[in-house]
Length: 275
Image 1 (spheres, rainbow, N blue to C red):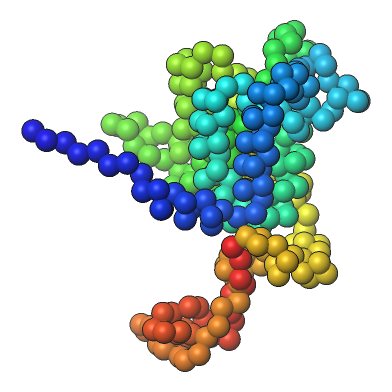
Image 2 (image 1 turned 135 degrees about the horizontal axis):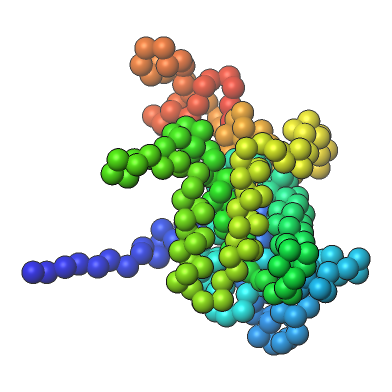
């Protein structure tokens, strides 16, 4: 009996990486740089880790630096591979500016602050936390809420299981199977992700009209490669595409612009160019 095993196509991986939006590739670059920097500066981990008793006015930066730091090559690789597709999806949905503001601000501050408060005032511990897995579970929880709104349950045998629960199950499995993982840290990330998915903390993102004003004034879409505009919500990620001829595609489908026989989008509306 023969079996075959195929390695991932390097060309497809390269193509995927080259198409990553701006903020996703920027955060991945910072995480990668931080990992290699810690090999030469041993104190980087201590400097940037989330250590509850070290949090003060002058060390609040730790709430934003701890997801960028990893303790081993395996830790770095696993978190990066898990984070990139989720972060790319988030940026594609919300735009580059919103993603940048949240992941350099509230999405570090909120789970980090919750973790610190629980550690100090409830558990009375001082366990340090590092790693982007807190963002992984934040994004997974957000995705699970989107799934829950479309499909509230999946059936396992005769049991209906809410579709928002798999991230919590995964957190427990990883905590049991992988030594040294932070159950509390992952739960804090998931809590913030659920809050974002349910809309309770959407106010943390700037209004669209402010983003459009900034994008227009600075011409970010034209200046920055792989930038995702806020208008992707209306026009899609890829900007204003040219159209030449009209072609009816099915009853009630509307008129599509066609270039070289490829339908591009509704004629007269256009789509914005992005990455």
